[in-house]
Image (cartoon, rainbow, N blue to C red; front, side, top):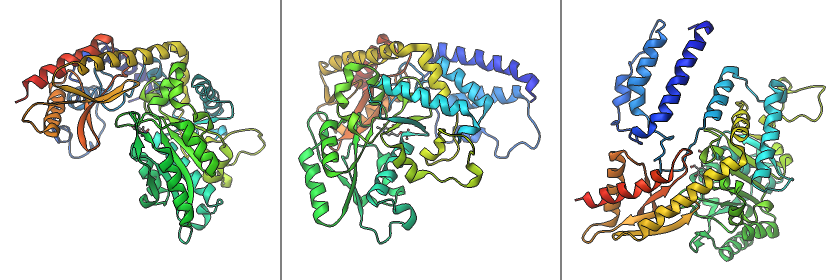
Length: 469
Ligand code: PLP
């Protein structure tokens, strides 16, 4: 294919994309294919010669599309959302067209300087103080890894990278069991070891870390000659939205001289609405925070917003500047690749810039407020429906429930229910475990969802539940 055919195909793809979004509600939300269906439909060997775009596009529609789960479907109530919006899709098209590798200021000054500006917009939008600097990481996992490496290095007087961890006093990190598994993986990759990730029990409806237990664990480690390094707190944990008392955790971190990282991958988005900020009060005292704009406000997968109080600590942990990556003769520049584990970086700020300008913060706030309100309406309806019990209360737009029936094992019944719902295809839900019990999660957050879509979940859930044998 040559560039002079590009515009024609570009129009075709744009028409397809528009129609896809306008008719998406007619499709089953979750892919209805069986394992291997798509693999077996794809030729086992690559073509030796070129194939036409007509053939490639036909196969995309016929082979690929049936195997897609529709994350942009208005009745996608599983996991957390991954929203795309028309302006952010267009920005990504431009980014792909430019395909700039934005690792250094000089490899695209616009990308670096826009990242600085847009992240400061988001800092202001979420009510964080001016002394936070932002960077876009590839993922929340990447941001958390950077945070854990920084807390490790700070605790080891910046000797971990040079000397390795063998022979060092074990570094200890504290978190509840409600944090995402990206924290475990960061601990593994950082060489700290799962045994040194100390799980603090939780209590209360928010399933927040018990502060007395946190203090006790740190004290016990100091007495045992170990090296407390940091705390990872969560705001809106993945399972059921667990949220630590950040102000209390931050106080412990400050008194103990520990690094505090706040994982707010999903719920951080809600902080563009001032009324939700009391839920993360104290975050202004953290050392770093991460949230994923794609998880709610439509900044489109991928990319995570990572705010740090001390970029110097982060770059002291991660920066390496061989001669071939140096920029000479320019002052006051930022090379964001020194703030993250991967060297290469996409121009991710562009989609955020398009998005925020196209909707304005008020347009984004309205969506979050609607989702939270509609989700709570559905919660109230399920709560008063015989046979159903609410297991965890609404945390923003996320809550969980179980269906109970005399003579049926609850875990088996609820697993069968969630599978039957997803096979039906009108809505999409996922399960989790709460205190060992299998429960069904509900969250609303897809950008185009409506009150009607959310309330339709009640019809589908109750109809399918009653039909289970
Ligand atoms: N933290 C939380 C609370 C999450 O829910 C998730 C993913 O859903 C992550 C971290 C990991 O996000 P990412 O896929 O951006 O690494």
